Length: 267
Image 1 (cartoon, rainbow, N blue to C red):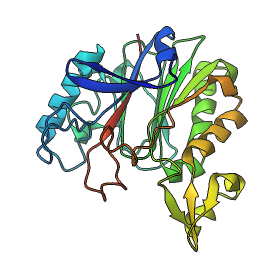
Image 2: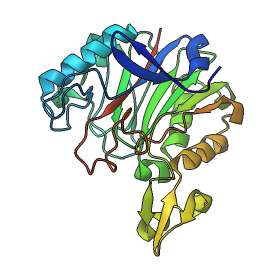
Image 3: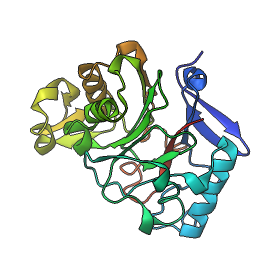
C-alpha cells in the first residue's frame, strides 16, 4: 500500500493516506483541477479569500462535499492568520465559514472536535496541513502550519489541546502531514532562521544569508517531542511548488493562485 496516493471521483482528484481508510474518518487534500474559477479555467479553488468569484468557490466546495460524502452545510472553517490559536468546535459552530468568508471563525489556525459528521476544512497553498486523529475516541484536529505557526509550535500545541479537551493520549494519535512546500523549494533568510534556534537541523545553508527550510521535518520533530510515535506520523512528502500541476503554490505562482483544501471529519 502506497503511503500517500491520488485518486479520482466524480471528475475530481484528491490526495489522501490509504492507511487511514480504517480509522473511521473521511479525509482528503483537494487537487487543483475539475472546478470553476474566474481566474483560470477548470480550477478547483477552495479559498473564499483568494480573489476569486465566491459563488464559484462555493460551487467547488459543493462538488467536493458531494464526491467525498460530507455535508457542506455542517462544515466549519476559519480565518487563518498564521497564529497558534486552536479552537474547539461544537455543534453550535456547524456551517461557520462554509459559504461565506464573513462568518468564519476569526483569527484561528487550528480546529479540534469530537463531534461526528462535523467536517473541518482549512485551505492551503504551500503551508503545511496537519491532520490529527485519535484512534481511541472520536476526537480529531486540523491545523494550518506556515513557517510562523511551525516555529511557534502549533503542531505540539494541537496534541496538547486534544489531550486537554478530550483526554487524548499522544501515543494513540495518527497524524498526517499533507502536501506543502518542501525543503527543495522553500528558501528563507536569516530573519526566519534566527527565530528557530531549537530546530537548527531543519535549515540547510544555501546562497549567502539564506537557507532551505524543511517544514516537514520541523513539524515531525515537534510531534515526536509531544509524544506521537514515529510510526503514527504519516507524511506525503509531496512538494506543492514542485507539483503545480496537482496543487496550488503561493510561492511558485508568485502569490496569484487558488487554495487547496485539507478536509477531515469523523464518520
